[in-house]
Image 1 (tube, rainbow, N blue to C red):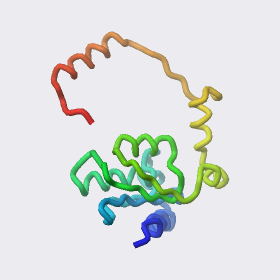
Image 2 (tube, one colour):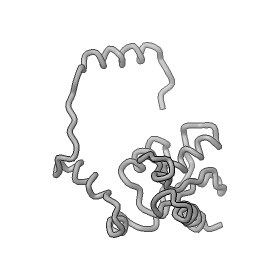
Image 3 (tube, rainbow, N blue to C red):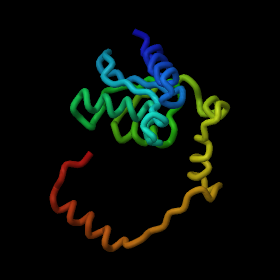
Image 4 (cartoon, rainbow, N blue to C red):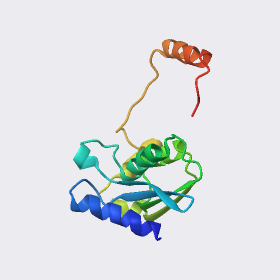
Length: 150
């Protein structure tokens, strides 16, 4: 099975239904597709519904776990910073992508703005520490519970 073809089918399904951009993904484990997703930003009115994130959610649901170790992700475009974070949190260590960030920029998606933020070259985002002591207390309380880490 050509997994990139499956990712492309996901992307075409999404754009043909008007769900969002041309981004489709599949997650594979042990030679089987365990998760599928395409961009649903417009459909769900949710900016986090990128193809990779949707596929991660689907795979986690199907495998009944938050840990996708041993899985590979096939996606039609190089993951954006948000999706990259989701991929790392899911413990996916191998990603195959079709189009790169420059290709994505050429069709009107703004991944480059995020990289400018990381480099401090834009004022599109501001963050500052607030109520740290109260939040440290929260962390201490959580740590005392010895809750499962992920």
